[in-house]
Amino acid sequence: MLDVRGLSAAYRLHRALDEVTLRVNAGELVVILGANGAGKSTLLKAIAGLLPACGEITLDGEPLHALPARLRVEAGIALVPEGRGIFGELTVRENLLLGAFPKRARDAEAQSLARVLQLFPRLAERMRQTVRTMSGGEQQMVAIGRALMSAPRLLLLDEPSLGLSPLMCGELFRALARIRETGVSILLVEQNAKRSLAIADRGYLLENGRIRGSGEARQLLDDPVVQAAYLGICPTTQLAKVPQPTVRSGQW
Ligand code: ATP
Image (tube, rainbow, N blue to C red):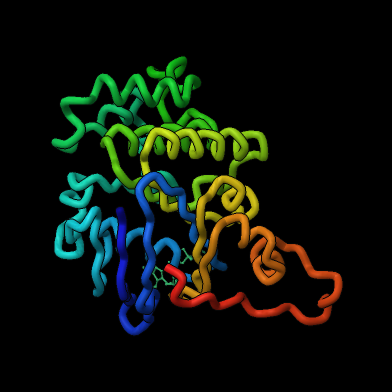
């Protein structure tokens, strides 16, 4: 599916991504965990083609790194950026239909719309509502729905739970699990490490633009080092000493 090898990106002299290598297998949900400023958004933007980056990106063996963003969408990559990137003055329906603009999505527009409304029934009741008048959670549904309208093979999600109530978060993570079940692969950047690892297959730890560790989601959830660094759980035996994240190099 997605293979990223040696991906580096910089903002002027600041190297925000340093030789990142990762993989998302077909049908997998993979989470990227990292502190503020670790380079998570930069990584997703570089994969989507919104930032210049060096390295290799392939989707099912097809090289993407030289393609502009719109051709990466045609190849099957859809990004839901942090802050959602939806059109607040347009209705839900208009936002969703804009998502089907890529050539790969046009013929399947009606089926995609039906699938999105089945996934988010709340949107079906709000098709004529102006998006800026909706709650944060509803707007996130519109953003994800619009990305799904492009018939992606891989969905990139940048902190979708940011600012949502616990109830809405639960609904969102259940929806992500259902999207994965339909065969769409997901690369998810999340602050909510506990909830995202609970639905993920695997995870990577990103620190200062570098991959510092990776593993099966269940292993990461149980790893005392990950618990201390990302889940806010302090091991009782090591209260005075917060350890550095485990490096499990060469696993993927
Ligand atoms: P957060 O969780 O806070 O969103 P992040 O892990 O997504 O953080 P990035 O937004 O990718 O981190 O930023 C990585 C680094 O690059 C940070 O040090 C940030 O200050 C810097 N950076 C990001 N965007 C720019 C930009 N447009 N110009 C200059 N530096 C930037």
